Length: 66
Image (cartoon, rainbow, N blue to C red):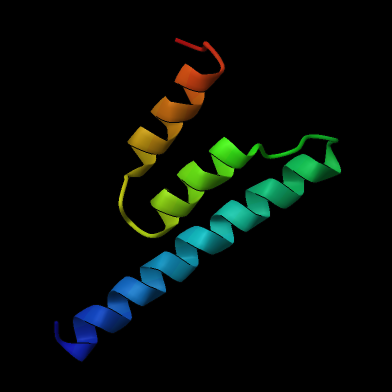
């Protein structure tokens, strides 16, 4: 893998992880907590193993939000 591609992928992962951390912090400010299962899904999303649609679908399925 070229350095440019590797750098771009690492940058995208950092951006996804930062967005997740910001969302988690916002939720905590409202009294919510992230479950280990949701955090695991978030880790998969941040790493690029699943896309945002799959991440949302898993959360919706977990909480019965068809």
